Amino acid sequence: DPVGDWQVPIGLSEKRATRQKYQSLDVMKKAFMLRRYSLVLDQCFLQTIDCIQKLNGQVGTRSPSQNSNNETLDECMVCSDLKRDTIFGPCGHIATCSLCSPRVKKCLICKDQVQSRTKIEECVVCSDKKAAVLFQPCGHMCACENCASLMKKCVQCRAVVELRTPFVMCCGGKASGNIPALQRDKDNTNINADVQKLQQQLQDIKEQTMCPVCLDRLKNMIFMCGHGTCQLCGDRMSECPICRKAIERRILLY
Image (cartoon, rainbow, N blue to C red; front, side, top):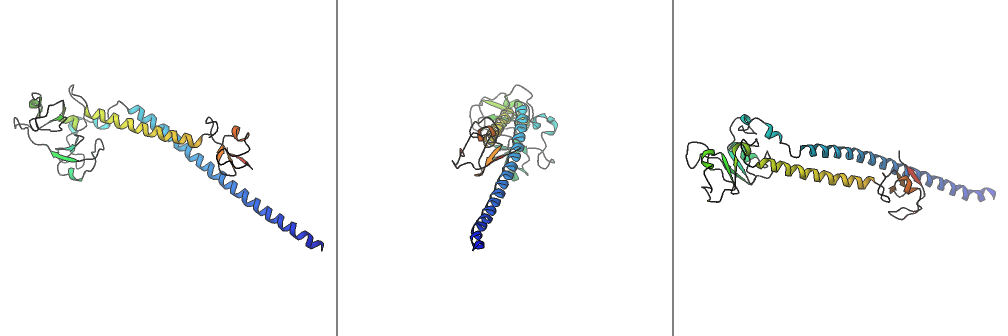
């Protein structure tokens, strides 16, 4: 029967056409997803570069808290009603009053975890003024500026005083004298850490968007398996360099 002789090849051709249609749709879907992924990576790439440039410009400069007037540095950063009178440990910053300090888990100046809270009392030597100088490395504030300048050892723990940090600097302000800056060093350390983190993210983005063969050009060609290379490398290959599958079709991204 001639009709029966032609039924088998016609059925096979229909199945083959259907299979090729689904394969083409699958390839188009992969190309669309890769293009979308590439656009997202390009946006992240530009944002990361912008952040690195901004942070690099901030290294070595004063933080916003240091640019504030010294008159406003004694206000509690939480309620703005009471004066700052609590030292956070171990960072040594003064950011809040004693009523607001229990609610603060991280220092509002350097973002370090708050492990201890110590209320500032009057000078233990003269008892006329409030303690206003932080001794390092012990971390005690027990003397006013006049009395602290005469001390070589902390009167509270008898430890040798290596650094004296005034009240204004503990609040994030600018040093009035030649006392070493505790806040500036911490700010620069934090900014350098942020720069290194962003640079690592930028390197990861570069590795995902660059051709895995030449490592010089952007990945703009994908194969049926979903992997990709640049056009120059992809045109020379007969199998995928990642999964070693034979390359049946190449899709160029624009």
